[in-house]
Image (cartoon, rainbow, N blue to C red; front, side):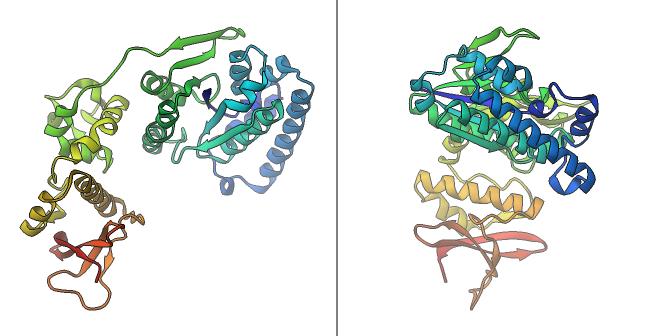
Length: 371
């Protein structure tokens, strides 16, 4: 059984078309649906429908060579199977098409999905990666974090269930391919793509690569939380004693987390969070002594949850994000002073963390039952 993860771009709409159509598609590559004016949207939709019908007819006729000339993503998949799609592959192998968080990226992936189903694959999934587009570097970095999360939560699960994981990087944007090439060293058994302009498949087996750095994270956890959870840029002086491979430095001497650093964090975070309650990553959060003592007496699994809720609270302060797992809000009914607000800790026991504001600082008072 294999899991084929393919990066997807818009080649299925731009290959073997007029220069006018290519220019039109490229103009709106990073656009959302509401950002495309009605006249151009009509032209784009008409072209997408014509192209979909064309490639579906080719698939029905099993004209794989012609399909390969149109879709880079399918060129990689067709070449990987050497144009031989036996029932065992079609019934058991899983295809995931990852695509950018854009209108055309979604539509291209949906068309590739239809083609794979027409070929006969039983399980094909399109996977949109939030924030992943190539319009600006800030959004792209958030998209990279979502890609890493996808690999950690989805791809790793398939490997644990004895699937051979193949990253097909023939299609998609070069920036996304570069990130996936790095992730492939840790999460894929094999990385494949078409060599240059030929139909020859280049196959790169899994390399004996691993990251070890639990102590690095633990001893510098505030910096890692700020850079990953709060998406902060730090000064190079703050990381001068840390491994260079974990960070990227810009020309102004500022540092952001690297892909390797983020993989390292995801590999060790829960293990580290099991050990203790760590100091808040920003001064706008403070722990009471009572709260600290309560958490120290919790089981390791509970400590993980508490530290993760503090991460959620950090993001709430930084970005005003209030996920259901946190649900930070003013206490309803009759609060017990000094607490005025609460947020969720874990749902199975209905416990809450109670807190109050002091000069714009959230002071966490205690963990207690729901009022």
